[in-house]
Length: 349
Image 1 (cartoon, helix red, strand yellow):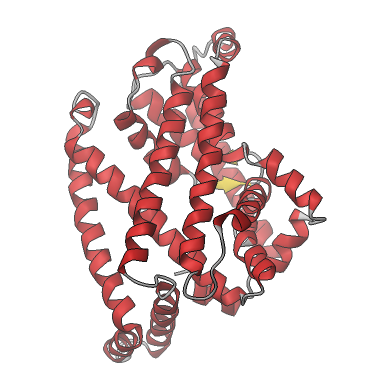
Image 2 (cartoon, rainbow, N blue to C red):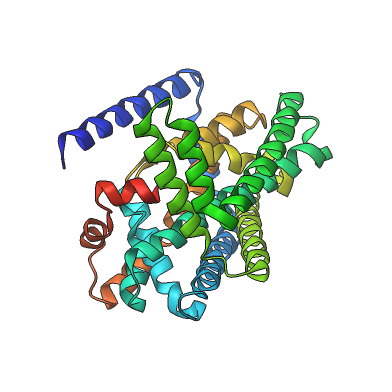
């Protein structure tokens, strides 16, 4: 581990420790007996249903990747299911260093270039962000069940802003898909008078982005990818709903509109993520349950931890089994899959 990574890890640990301290300092009357009682009385069938839904989401992910492979090589989704489980297992165990395992495994398995699969991975991220943003925007603008929540007016304004942002981003993405080289050239010409280095970097990223977008074969493929992406995030939402309703008390009244908003906090918190233990995702979820949905702190902690285990960690038993069967090492795969600095610059758009 180099000095830069050690420094980043130390900073992240300090941030998480500070967040945890501030969170628990506000819960001076935290009832640990109530906390353990909540865990003991969880409805197990609902938790099992949530895990099954999450597993179904990996099928949707495999099907989506299969659609994006069509311009290069037809691959049935069933062949891509194992790399999905192994890849997300690496992400759960190693944190961010494990996120490139999926494209690397698929490239090696299907005898494709790693750069082509990094392009697919980039487009996958775009559809993930876009489809979830659409769900959150619609949720904030049209869901009447959110009107009783604190900060509802602020949430609705955020939904309107998010809708406008999605539209603008969609238009820009369409033009890059149509003529990435042309847009890169124009941006380079406009930015060069200010900074040639920045102009070169922006142009390079736009060209790489355009190449990645050409994994979308035609309009039909675009519609398939959008439907699969929205379906994926809706399925995750229903997994959240099963987990929240596995608990007794006020969480029984949670609806799909509530959990979509809750997912937004969880995803925002996941920007601070440590291997195995997670971090920001749980803290953001717990904070939202307490401060937005008025859930008692003991119940919120129980639910936040279980949500993280179901949605993020549940893949690891299957992923580790598949990796062992294929004689693969998660750690070694991560080292082999991590792009060199120049490659990372062109794929992290």
